[in-house]
Length: 143
Image 1 (tube, rainbow, N blue to C red):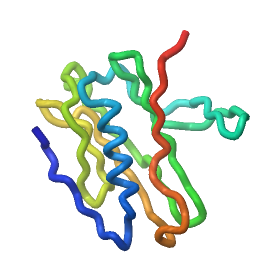
Image 2 (cartoon, helix red, strand yellow; image 1 turned 180 degrees about the vertical axis):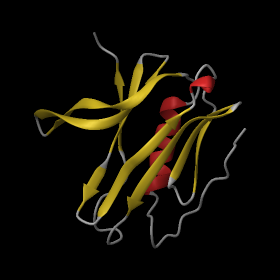
Image 3 (cartoon, one colour; image 1 turned 90 degrees about the vertical axis):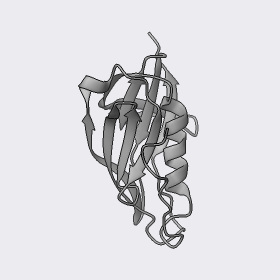
Image 4 (cartoon, rainbow, N blue to C red; image 1 turned 60 degrees about the horizontal axis):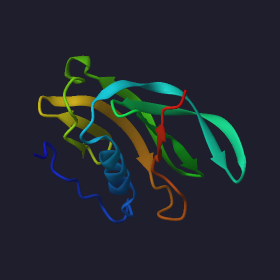
C-alpha cells in the first residue's frame, strides 16, 4: 500500500535525480525496522583515499547502515535540514518511502504511519550542469 502519491516534478527543475534518490532509499529500507537514526561521521573512500564526512545514518534491523550524505556542486545541492523520528512506530516494518512538497519532505512509513520524516532542501542549480541529490550508500555494520 502506498501512503503518498508519487510526485511528478517539473522537468525544468529535476532530471529524475530526486525520484531516483527516493527509490534508492526505498530499496534499502523497505521490509526492515529502524534500530537507530541520527547524524554521525562515516568513512568515505574516493579515488583511492579515505576521509570522514558527516552523514545522516539509518541503522536497520538487518545489520545495514544507510548513509545519506549532503551534496553541493556550485549552485546545485541537496541537504538534510532536519529529521523527526517517531519512536512509537519503530517496531513496525517499513512498507514504503514517499515524498510531499516537491520532494522537500520525505516520509519513511509503516502501516501505522510515518516512522521517520526528513526535511530536505535541494536545488538543481543551473539545470542540469551541476550534480545534486543525496549520496546514498548502504554499509554492513562491522565490529
